[in-house]
Image (cartoon, rainbow, N blue to C red):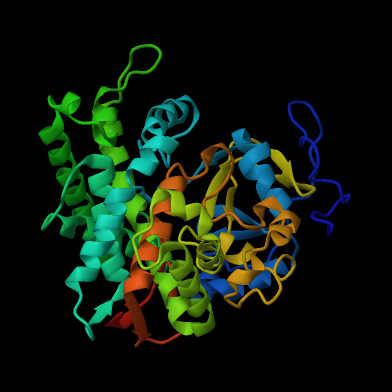
Length: 463
């Protein structure tokens, strides 16, 4: 294992100094920036190149954005420190300094006792038994999508999967069948991603500045919240007739008999409607993009489906036997982690990698960069599902691969997403082949999620 800090090589072990103990005097090194704007121009111009530049300074690297100090963490052991070991020293952070948070009372952005109370309540909707019960809905949605396609039709794959995963989510967790109302959800997803994209300086401007992006974001967020509040009002008073996440949010009480506030319920719905479908749709899009580019991988996947499923829809008992399918998904999430960067904020002066991290420092933990670090992966830019052998996984540092985050705040919907990915992959791959019509190396937009800058166009060929 390489030295991961500036001091002794074992600086990642044990607990960092706390209380009256001494902290290092030295803060992390990093690239020089410009007055006022810091490193924002380098980040906006070429995000990947900027991370390459930062990696030359070590595993904990400082940089600046307007009015704020950041550091990025590039070593798995140190990422584990932040997410797992010393997680209570780092709060969630979601660009709220710029006024762009969309659900501040939702599970993703709350902290402390409020977060623990919410997590305990919502976890009841994601038990193994409940998640397995959603399998039929996932399979039915995928089959209906395929039936809507004509042989030879040209489709935007990312948009098709976005519609599918939103439909699956709303049917499974909220017992709702959205039709024309879907438009506001997808419009918000696009608007929120536009607001959070790092390809322009407008992302780093406060919300009170009346830029076109800010005005559009405020308008669409207001419409989205009103839509969600309408769904909640329709269910209120009838929650005991349903057994889903929405009814759980409306009726669950904590140990003291308290229920969630109106804002908390709304923000949970807003969070799940956006994050619960957007990330899975992107994972499916990139998986089929790589299958279209790699015929040998597609052939091996088809052989497994034929052997295990025989052309039929997967039963829950079949999924454990789809080992190569799981490797394909793992490799897709490695190269294209939809949640491509995790954000934290130091709540106290602390130590990381032998450096002082001052209170208030924003930390970026970048799966997109760590997942392609040649220290952990051979030929890291290649799509190679066969790398995921048991021996390889055992040798890989835990946080060299973290597409669903980690620690107590790992993605609550991870099992739901993996089940959906396996089922949809099996059903679509057995029924359809895709001819890639877009650039095989599409430009990626680092926004709130890692989305394609342009639609991924495919021609459908039905088996």
